[in-house]
Image (tube, rainbow, N blue to C red):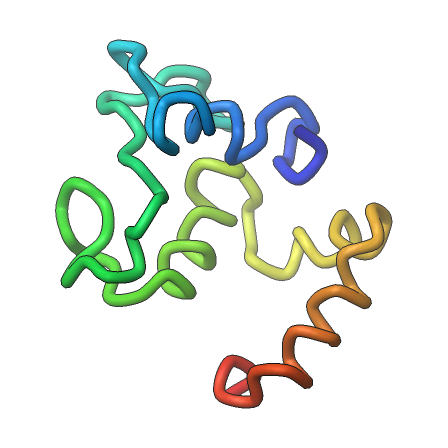
Length: 106
C-alpha cells in the first residue's frame, strides 16, 4: 500500500493473488479518485499479450508500470515516486535488476 501517492493503495489492492491477479469487484480502486470505471485485469502471463489493459494501449509491461505511476498510483509526475521507492528500500532492488537485465536500463 505504500507506493501510491496516498500511501493507501497498492497494485495488490486490485490484482489479487487468490483471484489469478485480477479484481472481481465491479470497479477497481485507485489512489487519486477512489473508484475506476473498469475491473483490473490479471497480471499473470500478461507480458505475453500483444497489448495491455482493456484498451490494449500499452505495448509492454514497462509501459504499463510507468503509466500506472501517474494513473492508478496517483502521482502528478513519474519522478514523484522516486523518494517513496527509496524510502521503502526499492532502490537497491532496481539497481540489482538493472545489472541482471541490461536491456531494461535503456
